[in-house]
Image (cartoon, rainbow, N blue to C red; front, side):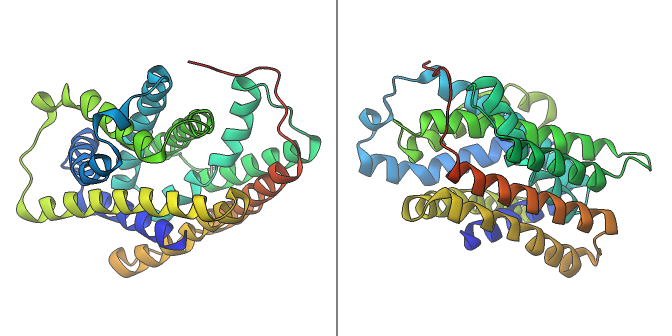
Length: 282
């Protein structure tokens, strides 16, 4: 799982290195194509077209739309902020996911998890630092985190019946279709070095998905998921090595609070039975 987190941090750094001259929608478009190519031999081995048949096309669609919006917003934020700043905000995913589980799945949340959620939001506020002018890219990073939290809820529903590779393929396929429409208006021919970064970014995305799937198959999510927070450390290291940027105090303090809150939420979810009044079948 640590290797998966390092891989996604490298992907984020490459998105930043590509720079603001390239639209994040174009980055998402190229990434979708390359990841689908990398997935092709795996899908062929698993049964090809028959393997891709699903009884939950709408769930795949909504999960993918939320995912591609989140990715585009994340790419936009990484192009304009320090990698560590965006990474800290993105660690609020379990906080948003808990609230969405209450709204969408009607899960019952105990007072301890509510306390952790409020504590986590305090960390988000500190990381954003509203005492100064909040950058628009910080808001897009927060919205991206919300979108990714929505995908987590859909994945919880899809995970009971759908193979992870199938879910990733549909995510990339819908991403390709959703971003294809914009290419005539935003496409900029990449230079050779940018092509290398785009390919590297896509390979990191593929590796991240594969390693995370493997980790979740070998160990409980409550054990594996807290390792996500090592991403803050790797992001700080990359910021220092490439851009010589030191993390701000509010980023560190907010990151610590969000990490404590997120890990506690993961732990409570394993101790509290998941209770909901209905199921979603789409």
